[in-house]
Length: 212
Image (tube, rainbow, N blue to C red):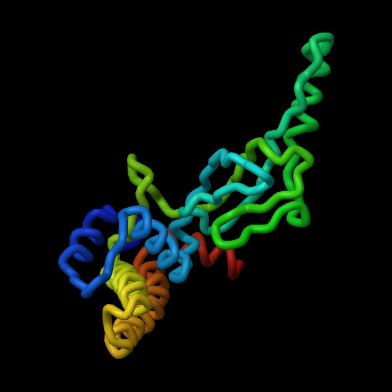
């Protein structure tokens, strides 16, 4: 049943036993690839809300790897208050400065946000949906055999893809792993429906939300 999770460390342990000639990776890459795989599976029922402040330099900032969908982005930039501002004016100034960014004032490309702020440096508060995380901020994997198999297949494919680009493995080897990922992805997506049907309370909530 989805609702129980396993640590990404269990996935990493298995990947460590899967040897691709010349294939290499680091922990942060595995985490980012795991988020990509979970996003492809796109199980909205396991999303949670999160908040994070990101630094903006030259109107560019790094979006957290665990972002699945953005709710809103708020500009934290505050002009320096002059010494003769009283508390009420400063508070109002702060309120006016903390305004949500419209989509026309920023774009997100390849994990970075590019803004059109007047101040090229500053910070933004980003409200977004993510998957459940453990105490160390690592993604938790739904304890579902097909989810786990799909994520393992995707990580192996990404490692092999890098090795292939470096001429370390043959195209047939890469293609085999790509096909494995293509097999497990729809299976993991379909498993969501099965889990919902098994969970009477959850199925009832969805029934009332989307049918009644």
